[in-house]
Length: 238
Ligand code: ZN
Image 1 (cartoon, rainbow, N blue to C red):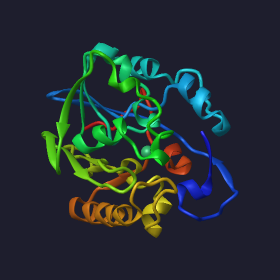
Image 2 (image 1 turned 90 degrees about the horizontal axis):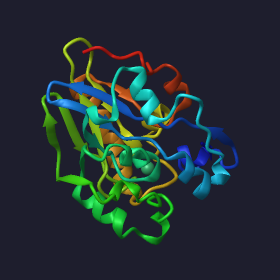
Image 3 (image 1 turned 135 degrees about the vertical axis):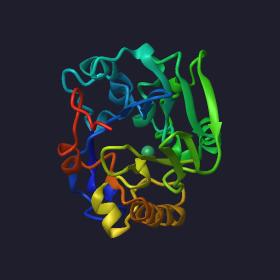
Image 4 (image 1 turned 180 degrees about the vertical axis):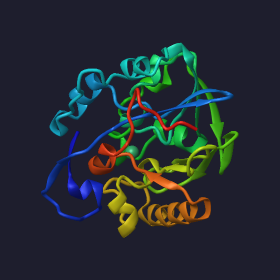
């Protein structure tokens, strides 16, 4: 999608538009296949966010991306949503058998958002009739080596994910607590947020976690960083 740079970094470079990526992460774990966020639904984005000119390249649907790596939608046992904004839940409905792990406060907020949050929570298809939630509170290890840390501010119930593997340094997926590497380095939150003070604290927390676990950051909406990430069918073996 195309957004103003001041959305990436609050109040920085207003009027400068740039393209940013949106993606999900598949984790093949001994306890099952997990998805961390599921991107946006193209139809929804075109209807509600036409001004942000959403583009999906051929092969970039969730089902196609899974198939490149040899998975089918029914293989996915758990969806972990960092938060419930439209660009992180758009593919959830393609996995009706998966259990959705999400922060309890986040689900409540998505159902009854502040007025300024309504657009961000505008895709409610994650809450389909077959959905099964496992509502989480506080920091928690959801499976061995998969840890969720509360990083509120962008939204009230936001989680970041730390993945520990045997073959590489831990990977810290910030979710929207930090859109970009520049946001982490300069400790500048995204233009969109529920609570800016909490958001800045969460960036500081992410930096502390990265030091403690000697983890590598993976950020959600940074085109330069994204170009360096491995994408299906490539993987980070661990
Ligand atoms: Zn968001």
